Image (cartoon, rainbow, N blue to C red; front, side, top):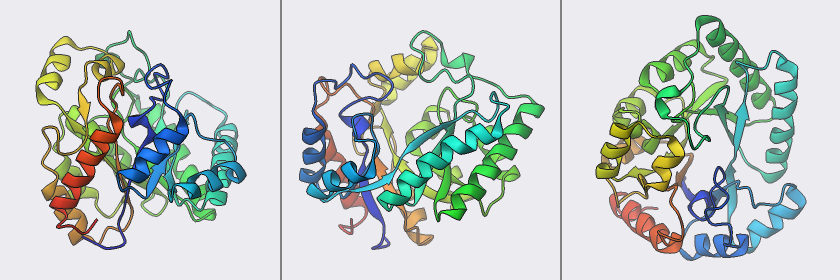
Length: 298
């Protein structure tokens, strides 16, 4: 494995951004100290984090953590005001620049159902050709803006959004500027969507600049698919877990990353109820498993 690869863990393992009631009693300090204790060197932005660099930077420094990336919701399809969308993005970019962060995860959230407890995943948005044109144009402009700051715009495909299926990912990658729009590859969301993650990693390794390492419990996945439940219900049913505790074999994924000299962040994620799944224990489980398949190079 490339020695410059960095491994971090997302705060969603401790406190859920879409369901703040999950982990609401866990302090940010406990979350960060757990990350450090489990051997991680980076994190992504969470809803409990300070919103300004002058407060967040020294806090993360206390725990020897870097800010690897942050989520940013875009609405290029539904918001006709492109400049407004880009202005909101620029505020995020300026913050990340102050933090020394080089990736932003963009998720197109027009009509998304991923954050709706009572709307089934089958009701996800399907964009028409005109909407795709607006999305592609918006993302290209977003990528150009990010490039000005030395930041990579990584599109995060996500269950319940308009970028979920392999066809949608392909359409996105084939029609956006390869020098401006990149990919955040998420093993859990790919598998949930019925996609073999290896196909995406092999096909788009040159566009992948950020990786989310998430696993799934196969027996739960079968049930939530059969029931056609909402994304959040699937989370509450414990469909997600950390690498090494689920159905995905991460070794061939790591082999692809190693052969490509990938040098970005890999972020462990598991959207679980921390009252049911102890975050520190699962963080250590993932760290040990990943280090093992990477031949103790992480």
